[in-house]
Image (tube, rainbow, N blue to C red; front, side):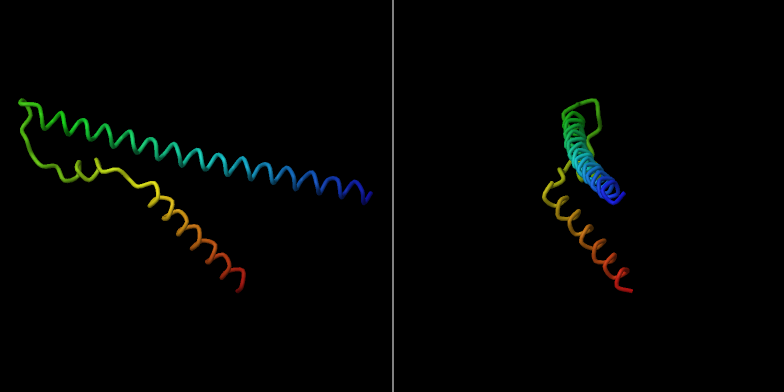
Length: 99
């Protein structure tokens, strides 16, 4: 009976570990897809703004919002923000566990 319980415990732990690894990979792929989508969207906005500026039929004006949206996000800044958020969550969980 003890041997069977040990076997089940090992099986459950290995299954959970594999599920955690798949979850981490899924999260990483989602983040990479979001960054790629942001880069493509930024490029589209840049191209539309260039077309608008170059087209004689369209009244030329300054669009601050479009200019801001056309600037690319820095992946390193995104990573730093994610790490800062994760550290804050871990710290708050430790405080809750301590109480």
